[in-house]
Image (cartoon, rainbow, N blue to C red; front, side, top):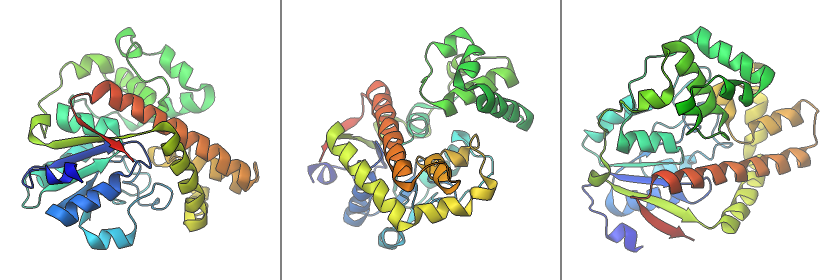
Length: 291
């Protein structure tokens, strides 16, 4: 692939792309061709309770190249983009060239563009936000945001809406105002080989549909069953795409076929949000068309 041949092997690599676009496969090829350690930048793949459902690299891929920051956070622990950046910082200064790969746009934007130093949100504020979300939905949280934040937030992303509400509640300042005070990035864009995998919508939808069915036959249902007694939909770990639909099936609320179809639809919507984020915020990255 010309893209790999043109990468400076001394330079960190950052790979963004929608779910199922082939990010992990590209990371493996770069690692095997040029060397390096693969670093997770997917907010769902950090949780120790998910491997199959979040498409974490399988053990066979982990044997081909070193993988870090996958499945290392206990379910229920506090974890945010700030935690992730603090874990990535020493890897950037290490001996092995990092190949950072994932679909969480906030992680990648914070890495290459900087992150505002927002004070930690108290547990009671998170609990209050979660209760509002569960009882009245995202519109109730949106109604409580400051105008600056409400005008720019992704209204299809409940996690971002809840985070913005929590920040305003805890600090008295809107998220947009905090973001104006963004510090310098850990990895400036000009110092990395940064690529976005630009997948066609129909091709991606077909891959998503095939992959989710393979997840179910490969153990995703068993993963969800293992956390069913502790299921709390507002928790960050519970936001794995497809998990709510499989929970509904295991509770007898839907058939498995209905759960699979709804999870596929949720995955396609998630991919749509990811592609919109990348188009809006990663125009200076190298765009690589796939397939």
